[in-house]
Image 1 (cartoon, rainbow, N blue to C red):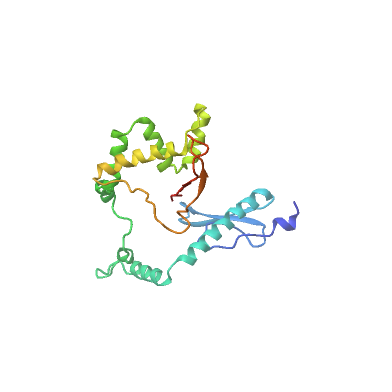
Image 2 (cartoon, rainbow, N blue to C red; image 1 turned 45 degrees about the vertical axis):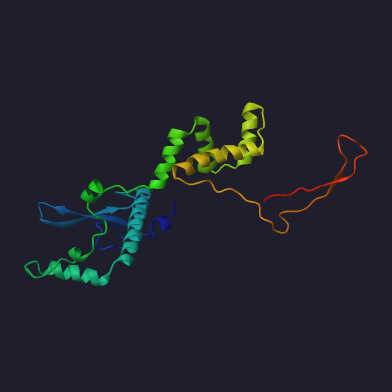
Length: 232
């Protein structure tokens, strides 16, 4: 590593930090309390002699990270609040003074409130549905309920999955009937009926079709008109 690069200090000089690399990059200094001298003493380690260049760069990187952290915290600080705290600390004998920290609203709550707080009441309708599914439905119906209503699996997907397991493909109507049986049980527990689909005579929903056919009993029978209705 080049000596010129090793002398480029990355971190700044923080007066509140007891460890730092000098501006010229020649010494790494740290301050400590000397019990014999009863004062703070600065120890200077010469880079390349008392301290390796690699280690000095690593320490400088650590100091730089601390500088960034202090800078971010400083941007979030409230100068007015800090001034109140300093004023409170400067006059500890003033009995009328109020600690600024005590004026802040406590939004965290107390541990006692969390321990003894009553749990939120569950929706009674959800409890009723769970009871019906657990007590009045068969295991097959329960699996159907959790797959379709819980996991959101479509009936067609469930139909194909059953065909893959059993080798038999149930009809779409059979899947719908299974679903309706579960809904009927839940609806009955609430004293209501399942909402059923109705036929509405709307244009495009009901179409008259004419089919010409001959009677099965006699090929010479007169032609008949047969009507088919497409439901919703």
